[in-house]
Image (cartoon, rainbow, N blue to C red; front, side, top):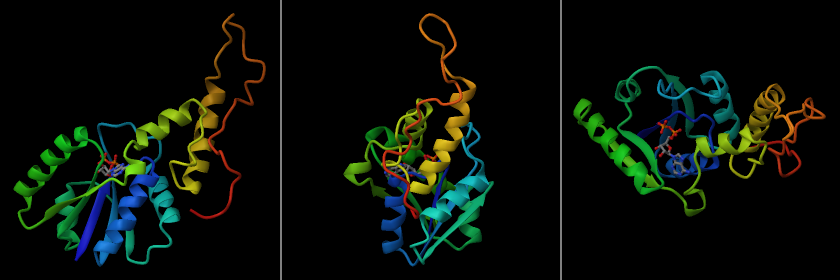
Length: 192
Ligand code: ADP
């Protein structure tokens, strides 16, 4: 059976990766599909997100990565997928996810939404949390695959330089070209 795992993945986190790996054990094929979410202004472009997901999932032979602009059920039908895979973290996820599952059911009765409960260690983790930490130069390599942490670090380094804060007295920072960025707690090792 083919399952699709739709989402924004802006960027992919270790929580997403955990759902993907567990999905790959449950289904013959899993297709991660990056959708543009018009209500969110993204940090990474769709091609960048596809590349990040591909680099983080090379170890999964039954995984495919794709993008689509349209309804999730339209994509599922195109690929003969019978399952929409989603993750649940907290009660607040449930309301939105249930609404989406019911809506999709009205559009395609033959396609089922399957929820995987988050692994406890990732129950707090979202792409937004990662971006919030990185925005202030904090470490994120324990939250996202290594290749993604490097991308985030580069991305926010530019932003931090452009908007380096002034001191309490209002004077310019001493070294605006070298802000404190600690996106990587550990030294970089190649691979996901
Ligand atoms: P969307 O914008 O569609 O919510 P996301 O990329 O934020 O896309 O999330 C995609 C799916 O992954 C959602 O079902 C979300 O609940 C799930 N998810 C995100 N983070 C986690 C996590 N840490 N553990 C389990 N599921 C997660």
